[in-house]
Length: 306
Image (cartoon, rainbow, N blue to C red; front, side, top):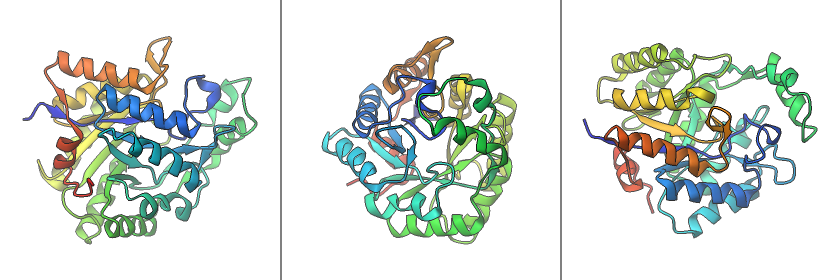
């Protein structure tokens, strides 16, 4: 087993809001700089969401994405770019998917099934908010389904294939692995699938070692040992325990302020680079090495590297 592993850094996401951390990047120049800093710290790939530059709300605005992506690309920093198609709560499939043909990144996330998305408890836990949109957005998730139907998945995969973009298949639960297998069997997934186990979201699979092993064992049965690549992360404090365990199972890792705002208990991360540096340090202590972007592209069978 190679000791090289992909380190993916999810820069800002759509789950956390500015009230939760003064360091969460939401202006396009800050998101881009965090991505460049993460790459300098050892990230193989960066996972990009856009946000409204004035209030930090998740955004599907292609011009905001353009500022982020063009800044990263113009830096000439060697890093794989993964753009979300998850977007933010309430966005349409058209809004979520528009980034793929526009920017043709090496990777694009694709959610492999629908789930309840329950962050409503945060609406009551936090008493003072920085912006008006934050509390209502969390409150509405008590009656919200993150919709990713077979029709949605088929459409996304067709567009990704047309644009030579590798799908990063976000699996929030065991059934999502079966959805991926169905899409593969019906010709919508080309080559070796790249799975991302998303663990610890309220409404989906929990972030613990037992569930991680269950996910891997199920993937082994469905795709065959060596028949897929995979990464895993746990939301919040489980980010590093899940990541480290996954290294020993043969998988890749993801860190970043989309998933976890703290460098350690009670210590907020001030930059995504700090989270990458911690993971790289732990990896090296355990005799693992972060893959370069070129090595990551080879592992994932990415040909769109120009």
